Image (cartoon, rainbow, N blue to C red; front, side, top):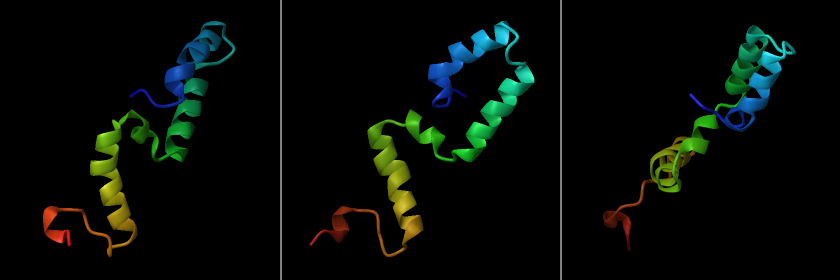
Length: 76
């Protein structure tokens, strides 16, 4: 899985790895720490429509159950 910002900085990290300034284990630890501390990284890969309609609707409802998904029946 490519995750932000590692997709942008992967080249630099691999350069450090090739110059023996960083071990593969250090790289994995750095990456795993970053991924585990940023639980919404996968949202960067979603298109705006998928983000809004699929993730955000459900996330808002999970935050407060008074919110309902919009549909034609709820319109005045």
